[in-house]
Length: 340
Ligand code: PLP
Ligand code: COI
Image 1: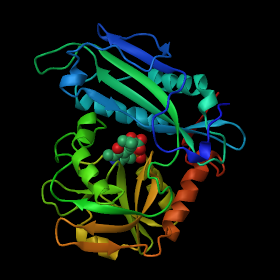
Image 2: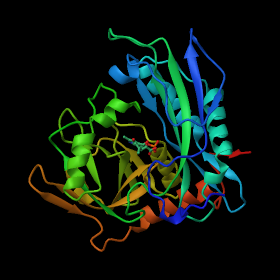
Image 3: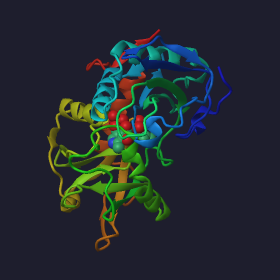
Image 4: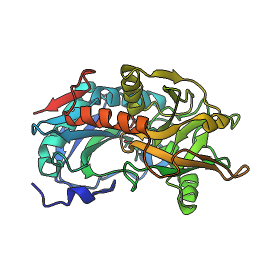
């Protein structure tokens, strides 16, 4: 086991021992290869470098009290990567290749698997890129699929403590019929300036609105948004946000806990009615929101947690989700795959 200060990990890159690669050539996928190189030799005209043929995923594995390693909902991440691949004309990665690459990444880097109870996880980053050369705007004929993994702590430095969020009105992350539903690099490039400005203004994340009317909430930095009112879990339905797997888990947990779940357009003004709000995602888990500020409109401030503590519903959802991930709570939804 590595001598790592697990409790102090943030969500940042660190080197591990091995990554797994698989090349697509002549219309078919090759064998999985193990690499200890952090670099990828790449053609200067590769389509991922010029035309954004790039999709990625993010999923986590956890070590339980019983010392078993549980990979969380990999089938859903695989399906989303297939969807992303189809969205930007890349070949689909077969499920067995996706799973085997994740499994080998976990097993070959076992000394980097955070022990139980340290508040850390092993984060897997599958990546699919066009490596074939093209100068005309068209899809490549060669691709690389790879997976690397790193031990991580909380995405927001606050951890499970409410954060401040800024509404963005001067740019869009994704267009309604664009690539927002795919996990492709271009969406993140489009979010860098607004995310950077929000950080410079002292906010943890930018809250994006629908690109067409700027009336409804889309999503929150690298996470989906939800609000809680009257025992109801409300989350935006939009054609320009990433379908979050964590959000789907929380909807299931909320229903199972006797809450009503609504997935529908959420107008900005409705923020005034929520008792609690949060951002959810694999990296963010649940990040409760303290306040949301509409600086670029009229400065309206929506305050949810003036005392800076997480609300009771966010806390309950967080405990139930992380309890299942760690193996402390019965996995009644069948979300975990034991890796051995
Ligand atoms: N929205 C965006 C833009 C993201 O990058 C992510 C992270 O994957 C999410 C939402 C949350 O999705 P998931 O819960 O599947 O990780
Ligand atoms: C994740 O939650 O897995 C993400 O991909 C967020 C990320 C872009 C940091």
